[in-house]
Structures are given as C-alpha cells and as structure tokens.
Length: 164
Image 1: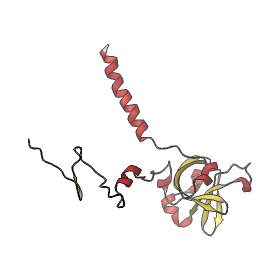
Image 2: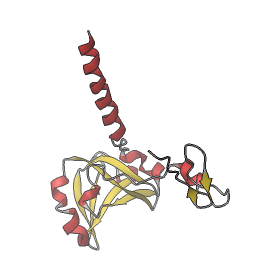
Image 3: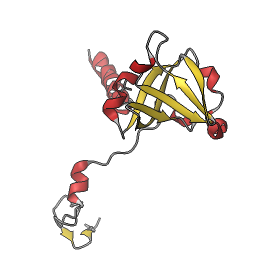
Image 4: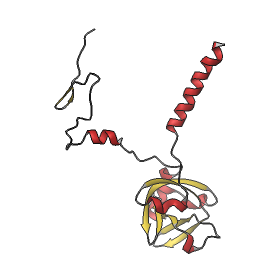
C-alpha cells in the first residue's frame, strides 16, 4: 500500500517543477498591436520571405488570402544581421516562435529579427518582483530585506552567530 503513495510523490513533484519552468505562451500575430513596446513571444507561420529593399528582408506571417491592409504584423531583418540570424528561407513553411520587442510602424506592428537566439520563444526578459522593488524604495525608507527575527540595521540585515 505504501509503495504507490511513495512513488506518486516524486511524480507530482516533477509535474510541479516542469510547470514552474515552462515558458509563457506566445501570442498570435493578430494580438501584436495590443503589446506595443513590450518584449513578447509571437508564434507565427512564415509564408514567405520578401525583399523589402534597403537591405531589409521581411518574414511574411500573413496568409496569402489576407490582404495587405489586413496584415498588421511583420518580422524584419537586415542583411547585416544575416550571420547571426542565418538563412531566412529555411523558415518558409514553418511555424516559429520568436521573442522580441513589438514596435509600432504606420498603424502596424513589427519585430526586428537580429539573432537566432530569438527563435523558439527566446529567453524571457527578467521582470523583478514588484513587492521587492517597492521595499527597496528610497522614498519609503525600505530596507528590502529583513531577517527572520526582524533585526535589521541601517545598511540591511545584521547576521547573528548563534554558536554551535
């Protein structure tokens, strides 16, 4: 009787850990205009690579049935980034996850593709815990830390040696 219970504990722990490190979901291109100036992951199908002139390539993520007026998001890459991005043509026909900052441009949204590290959802940008940031505020005189016994000093927490 005890063996199944003991085996289920590690399984539940592993499921909890995998959920804790899972990356946040990517947004579809249609939602890009709602995330201007934010570092987000976008999941989009690449239909073709278009030469945008001035040494710019555009990953077209709108279906051929979508009119240009209804296409509100695109991914751009300059030829000077070709070493760090690689061959864009191999992305055609694939659904990609790309992370970057969404920029407004003439009523549309774009993302600059400058590094292959942006693919597969990229590394999420670090966001500090708002409670910690508030506790470090100079205006509130917060220390940011407190020890378990509540003893703090002018420059933070005093650590006490309790002996052996």
